[in-house]
Image 1: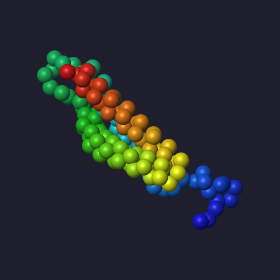
Image 2: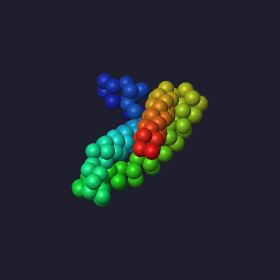
Image 3: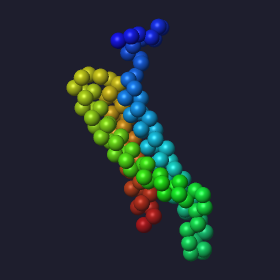
Image 4: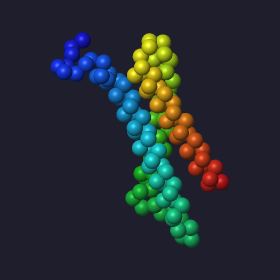
Length: 119
């Protein structure tokens, strides 16, 4: 394994671990988009009888198609990282697994909370 001059090899993350963190960030961005969309829908005029979201409507609707697969992929990757990190004593994998499972738990709680608040 080649070393980068002046940088210990332990601090350089593997490309696949960086990809998993990017997936986690993509899921978080989709969650924020969903929450902004829900706030936008709350302040919409209810007397018009139709949902006119303009340009932002398709973005809010497409956020679900990004959020659900990335959340499920993060959940599976987090569980796998916890198991493999524990078995191989890799703290970077264990740390990612804890962060991913924590985020997935938080995201599911937020989505359920918003759904219950709308009922």
